[in-house]
Length: 260
Image (cartoon, rainbow, N blue to C red):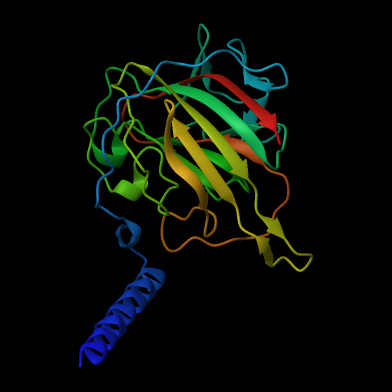
């Protein structure tokens, strides 16, 4: 009797999960892919690291955006605002991406939510780093950037998530006005000659020295609505997002990459 009961419970759970996946796949509502619990535990982070290692490719060293271009107009340079040692998203100019394309790499970038940040949820300092930019839209593989310090949102969309795919292992966000840093290890997906997936992408993410993703295997490229999916591509640019929300824009500095 116990075995029969366990079988019935297991079957019911499987049917429920299948129904949920089918609902998610068929829904045109972005909320269908939002997860709100459990919330990651809060962890206090460490100090900023040292300068780029000797074999790194510096993507921003504090002076210009020569290593970047506009996604909407690839022939044009990035239009974001460069200041003293950092640059800031210029709202309405669109995303920017690197001139150079990469496959597997180690990425370091530092970012700061402005101290006068406004808004709530996803409309509070929202940006993102796309680890392989595959087109002018938001296709790619996004590691979310936003103010997740005492700011509630769906947890598979907070800082450190692979957006809409996985919840971060912790919340290591600092207060607005403080510099924070990502260290990311990216293994790009591989595709067969016919475009089918040969091996999926994987990513490890540190925020302020705290592991948020531990070799997470992605189920596809980022989708705001619907389930992730893979489309064949080769070496790709690294992209930063102009999200377009009304809150004050975030800033970046000290960005470098090591090809693996």
